[in-house]
Image 1 (tube, rainbow, N blue to C red):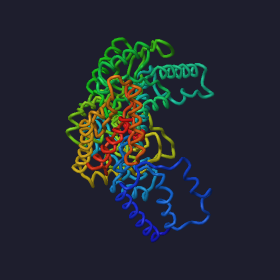
Image 2: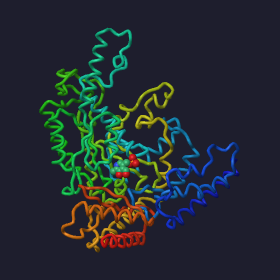
Image 3: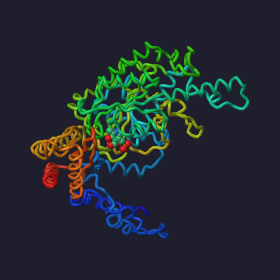
Length: 568
Ligand code: PLP
């Protein structure tokens, strides 16, 4: 394809994309194809000769569109949104044109520097405490990750590394000469190295990541990948499905009593099932009390300066009972934003979806976002509810060195003057992959095109749609019962009881029938969950194209089908 052909093809493509958005409401929301549909439509092999763009483009409507579920459809009320917008699409175009694996600053200084700037803009816009800014007092900062799952894994890797450095009675990670004994090592060196490896293995086996029964499954998956335990604290309707101080305190106490070592907690701002928000003040309070109690019991010894002296009370093996000082340089984070205490539990705030609503100052005040200055990391997906297309997961840490220590590995081929001189940020050290795309462009375009006011207007409008929906359900208490919400444009509901004697199973079956019949209409798409054994339906109103009339239409469909199900 030459430049002229590209000009024509791109014009035709943009035209088709615009028509797609303009007529989106006339399509069914969910793809209706059967598994394997596409193989039947495509040749078994790639073509020998290149084809003209016009022929290729035709296949988008003919072969691809039937297999597309339309996440920007106004009737898409499932899961959470997966955003897109014209400015974001333009960002992707430039990013594709400027393609590079921009892992180091020198690989394209603009890629790194724009990311740092726009993530600082975003942190300020969301009202995050200054410690999460690259210019803040604690060497914090943000980095774009592919997904919230990647962010939580990255946070957990850093937390594990930080915990081991601060609590093992010897340097961690081990110097390479001792971590993998060289053949010419003396027997004594080898024995010491083996004993250390053993101590690390024992400690890892006791390390626990905590979450709740409504924490997103990515936290459990991260623990699984890292080979550490995961414990879910039960949350219930009584506490609004939020993690509270007493529940966390009980879980921590249970872990300590069992000789386990909590090192990570996933707190959530906007759980996937019901959009509940954990009690940040309660979390901080419970962790403080646990830390004090553990320190008093000799489980964690406070260190300071460039090393953390003291014994970690393993009580079961190599490395125990020694009073040593690590030389890992893991200084406590100084400054107004709070000290990091050695061996403390790392708190990651997963705000994957609802974090977007923090663009509104009233939401910042309601969730008391300032409290997270006590915590260690925060992540939100602009690609969910903030008009940037997938992928744009914005991950912030209070001290970037926590990431760099855990993930910054050297390989001669990546050395360069700027990096070696410590002058620049190399984002490869803040993430799991090496290469990275120019993702900040689309964020920059969206922030500039909509402006703060435009983003606030969008979030407030979609939250109001959620309230409109919940009010319509309340007006039909004969048919529906709200189980949770509306919260951040999400309402969770089930069918009202038909009679006093109706069992949970009967009501679950009827609610499921409602859910399946409504989805079968193809007009809207809903997802479901199970809360304390109750089958419930989730309806989210965050999609950019959804307007009042679409919510009214969704209510109409639900009422019609619910009346039918109730009668049946
Ligand atoms: N955390 C929460 C609260 C979520 O709702 C989700 C997905 O919806 C995730 C994490 C995982 O998001 P991702 O697909 O970006 O990994």
